[in-house]
Structures are given as structure tokens and as C-alpha cells.
Length: 396
Image 1 (cartoon, rainbow, N blue to C red):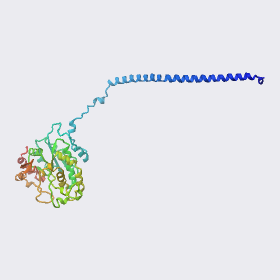
Image 2 (image 1 turned 180 degrees about the horizontal axis):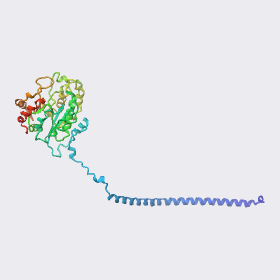
Image 3 (image 1 turned 135 degrees about the vertical axis):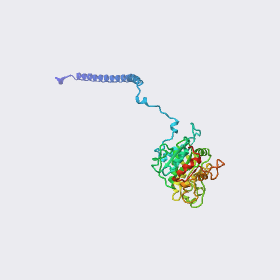
Image 4 (image 1 turned 90 degrees about the vertical axis):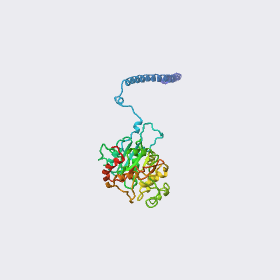
């Protein structure tokens, strides 16, 4: 019976079934295309709505936070003082016992303002720099010398003795005036390093205009007002320099110093100098000449007798008076000058030191040649205190 079905009927059924599948496929394609188009059209609008909602929420939260912040100030912020950047903090010298290395100290001290006029009231001071082994044993005499002249001087002490300040009374002008110091050997290059260290520390005080190198064996020959006026009004520096033949002069020169220093430029002189601020800055900033002396001036070459005389004569000859202000007696010969004991100190002796001869000062003849003298032993202090203040008219 089944096998007897009409073939035409079967063909018609297959045709109708195929048309039905094609119609379903077309419907699905049309639905997909419609949905895709609808999504493309609707997506930008949804993004805009979402952005507007987020922006509105952000605005509301920001407004609320600002309202809370305006009513609240953190206690730590409210207690902070305003930051002050003034001239006073820059001008105030640091504590003498600082922690700077020599390189850091010299770098800071060598800073020079380009503007020559000072934008503040400035009273020029004289820096008295004592290069000592220990304490300043003649300090009682210097105390009387400085009395009544506060604000016109500053004191700096370089001592290799770490206990040098222990015995200094708190009411003394030397109390707390020791700078960071290092060991110094007689005739060694480290003596120049100590002198540069003293200069650098003194340069940190912008009021210091003149710089005097002294020892614990030095004494003043005149009262403070005379010394101050002489130094502050001087147009020259006082670094002794001369050319000397023989083993203790040119004989100490090393050919290795050339071409920076030739033997014709080699000089000798007293280490006890006095100079102005401009030269002091040049001395501490010098690397070229100091390096030569550091490397090649040893043994029988005493750097403290040759470095400054050579350096100043070679570079700053015109501004140098070419003499020292500190009297030293080398008449007896030998490596050390005459040392004065208590019995040597008399009124006649001190008068001779004060008026031994005349010298040129600012282009004119002057009765004063030396402001200081050495080498006085500690045993001479008693007589110095009894004779000097009256003779030199200290403020008593």
C-alpha cells in the first residue's frame, strides 16, 4: 500500500517543505539585520545617558566633599608657621664647631656676591686667627686688648689639641672660638691647610673685612683702636715676599713645580700675614698653586714660608705691601726665631718694638711698621700684664 503512493504527490510535498525552510531562513536573516541596525542606532544614546548620570553623581560628591573640607582644617597644618626666606638666615654665620668637611667649607666660603653694595648695615670687623698647638697661653693680655670693642672683631682658634677649650672661662672672648681643627706639623704642608681652614671659617662671617694670622706666642704692640684703624683703612695686603739665593731660598725650589712656578718666581717670607677679604677668597679658592706646593714642597722645603709669598707675588703683586706686620727676630740664626722670656720684657724693650723704624703706609711714610710681635713664652705673661696695658693704653 505504501509502495503504491503517487510519485507526483511526494514531489509536491518535498517542494512545499523546501519553501518552508527557505522562508524561515529569510525571516531569521531579516530579524538579525533589523536587530543589528537598531543596536547601532541606540548605542550612542545609551553612552550619553550613562556619562550624564556619572557626571551628575561626581558633581554631587565633589560638592559635598568641598563643603566638608571648608569646615575642617587639619590641626597639623593649622599649627605650621609660614616659611620665611629672608636675608637674616643667610647672613648669620654657622656655629664654629660645624660638621662640614674642608672641601665643603671652602666651597661655601668661596661664594662671592656679584653685587658690590651690601643691602644691609655692615660694620667691618677684623678677624684675629690664632694658629696654636694648644690654648692661647697669653689670652689674659689679649682679653685686655679686646675689652670694650665688641662688634669690631671676631676670634678664631685652630688648635690640634682637642682639649684646648676645656680651661677657657665662659666669660672669656676665647670661649667657644675654636674651629674644627686637625693636626699640624712644623714646616709641613698641613700648616697651609690649617691657615686656609682658618680663613674659610672667618669668611663665613660677611662682616669680616681684614684677616690676621697670629700664634699663641704673639702679642699686640698697640691698643685695639690703633690696630683696627690701621688695618681697616689700609689699601694693601701685608704678605712678606723676597727672592733669596742659597740653600734656604732658591735652594728649596723643585724643578717639578714648573711650569706653574718657575725658579725666578720662587719667593720666601714670613708666614704671619694680614690680608683683605678679596685676597682671602683667592687664597682658599686656589687649587693650581696649592696643588704644586702640596705635591712638591716637602723635606727641607717649608710650605708656610714659600706658598703665600710666591702665590701673592705672582698673581696679586700690585696690592701687596710686601712686608709683615708681625715683628720676629731672626738675628741669632737657626730654624727658630728669638724667644722672649719674662726677664726680656721691659718698658724700653716694648717701646723699641713699637717705634723701631718707619714704613710706607698707603703711599706715605708712617711711624708704625709692626702691629704685633712674637715669640713670647708663657713665662713672660706676668710682666706683660704689668707693663703693656699702660704703655699701649689699653681700655682698663
